[in-house]
Amino acid sequence: MAKRLTNKPNTMNNIFNIKRFGKLLKQQYHLSKKSATLSLLSLFIGYTLITLFTLMADRHFDAIQWVPLFIILCGGVALPFAAYAFPAFRNKGLTFDFILLPCSLIEKFTLNLIVRILSPWLILPLVFYVSSHLASELVLWFSPDRFIESFSFTTILQEIGSEKLPFILTLTILIALIAQSVLFAGGAVFGKKPLIKTLVILGATTAVVIFYFFSIIEWAELFKNGRVPWLIIFDNKESTAKALVVGIEIFVLITTWAYAFFRVKEKQIA
Amino acid sequence: MINIKNLSFAYKKQAPLFQDLSLTEGTGQIIGLLGKNGAGKTTLLQLIAGMLTPASGEILVNSYKSTKREASFLESIYFVPEEFTMPSIKMWDFIEAFIPFYPRFDKQLLDDLINKFELDQQKNLSKMSHGQKKKFRIAFALATRCQLIILDEPTNGLDIPSKTIFRQLVAGSLQEDQTVIISTHQVKDVETLIDKIILVDNGQVIFNQSIIDISEKYDFKIVSHLPDNVLYSELNPMGYNIVTPSIGESSEVDIELLFNAINNGKTFN
Image (cartoon, rainbow over all chains, first blue to last red; front, side):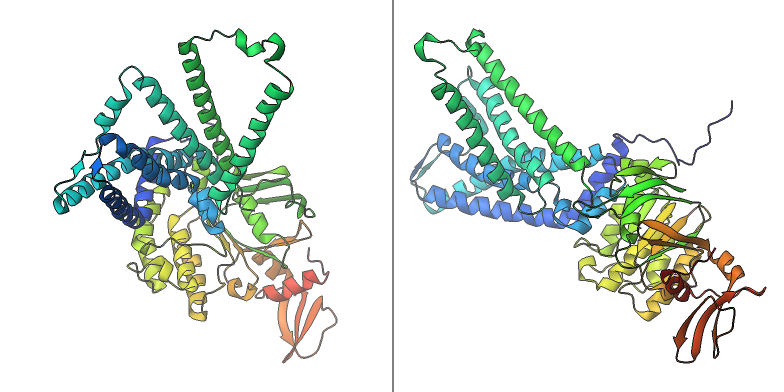
């Protein structure tokens, strides 16, 4: 049978090729091993010092007191880190190399998603865990009469309680992922100062949404004079409400990723 | 290799740069893309590479629609822009990071080119001069053995010996199925290198001929007195640079003179 003649060199998988994605990961290692090592080292020193000062300010430190510190320190790094996704878009020369790198868009996008959104979930708690234990040991070494309960994920989860745990955990993880993803999408849209610009847009959008709901509830007198809005017809069982909240969060998360993906796809050098 | 059909393109809030431009080019040649400032040389190269999306028309490179930026298309093309940013890593690390993406990469050739350009593989790229970075990018581009290599103003920033080495390396490193497009203002730098001249102006290709054809049809010489059959002349300290119809023997093409002649409205068919 005659073969169709074509100049195309081969018909490799142009959507997602695991071998090519491996090359992309290897490339990232070569390009950022030095800066990543320095960043992790700085993070470890920073976390240890902050934890040290926090512990020294309090003679009695319970396990639950670690929670706000953990959230602030991890969130304070993870959110700006997500906002500066697609670092190539901060510089025309790097945008050039990003677009022309022989990988599919899905591969490049997935790499950014893993590095900017998922990797902080593994790395930051680990660094915090080591830093907090080191700081606790140092404080107890200097001042053995203090009470410090070590940071432990299981202790914190036990505090929440087993009944509520799956829902609270799901809700928290999804909210954190959404926050990261919105900033991640901002990183794909804005070349310069993506964190500030995304926060401004987010603030303005939130204000509009709050104003909208305020106006339909207050000004349209939605609940007054015995009126029942259409949304009340839904079954208001707790499980339904939980499912609805989780469903909305998953929808928002996927929509944010899709929006970021299409913005990256449209990226041009001009 | 390159097939552009009815290409139209305009930057946002600007007049159209290209309108209904068509161009077909085969493999195995070094093309000089020439044009005045703002004629759209770099834009045309970026459109060919799929970095910009045309308003209308189609660009096919090796049967790939360039705007789709498919991975297999991207691994067959290497673009050295006029201005670029190099990461703050050693040259060796850059090579290790990017080699796997180019299936035809020739490491031996890269080592040779790096030696000829007198570059140090252990040096940090960000600490190199602009000329050294450019030489490295050109060497890397040639070593990829990509079917299409695009060099935008490659000799800008190179010293005189490096320009000579550049010409030797480009001419000596290419395989038969490779095409190189060189966009430049400095036509003298690529005069002895290119096989074909494409001149763009006012959104159109106004000249597209091979050097062999031009040299067979026209004579380029320096004379003290203008002959009757002169097609175009320019005063120089020794007399005149002139273009005349050929009288049988082929002469070396003075691309700068040809470029000026075309820009002054002379037509060469």
